Picture 1 (spheres, helix red, strand yellow):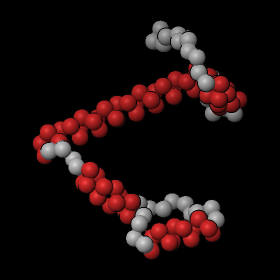
Picture 2: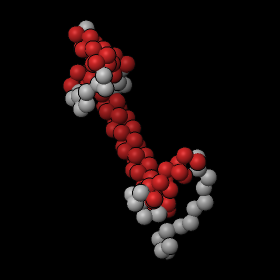
Picture 3: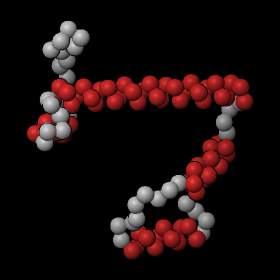
Length: 107
């Protein structure tokens, strides 16, 4: 352990511990500590992105007013209609439901 690292004792769900140990066994992580370190780094990055998004929305709303529920609904519809399907439904029944929804104008 280098001087830049600190020791941490935590209690985690057994399934997470098993997943970390499996990652080490599979060669996807050098050690359980390395696996946990990556997970914590990813969480910290996510928290920074969420904070930046909150700041951006607050700045926008300070300048242009609060974003309404209607505006959110309109944007959600536009996002769904612009989305690209990256995989097909697993079976014909699911495919027919998707086709039926699209024919009704829903996404």
